[in-house]
Amino acid sequence: MGFVKEFKDFAVKGNAIDLAIATVLGGAFNAIVGSIVDSILMPIVGILTGGVNFNELALKVGDAQLKYGLAIAATVKFIIVALFLFMVIKGLNSIKKKEAAAAPPAPKGPTQEELLTEIRDLLKK
Image 1 (spheres, rainbow, N blue to C red):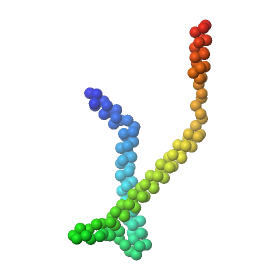
Image 2 (spheres, rainbow, N blue to C red):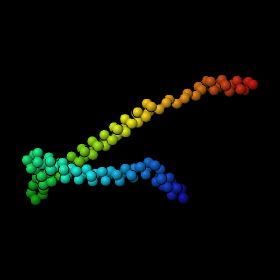
Image 3 (tube, rainbow, N blue to C red):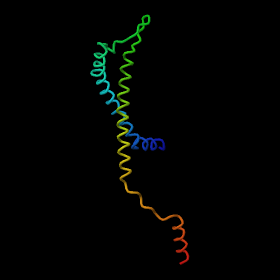
Image 4 (cartoon, rainbow, N blue to C red):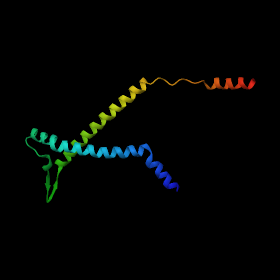
């Protein structure tokens, strides 16, 4: 039963659940970014580059095709996702810094010497 209890403790921990939620949201976000890049950004880039369709860019080598246009589109998607995540993390770090600066410092307790002196005095009595 130890294994089952360990697994249950792991699965119910906040970190595992947060990771699962982040994975699902990341997949959904990736679909949105993919749609925006494929449907809006790459056609605009294609227009700016003289009507180039990046999905059809390929290099023929014998019977094989190296579809480098798809790699360019995937790179654009990656850059957009990375930029978005960078901005989110930067914003979260900024909020954490503000909260840390606004939090009052923890009250200082007695030093070790003061506690030992107090114990000594109590023992003398």
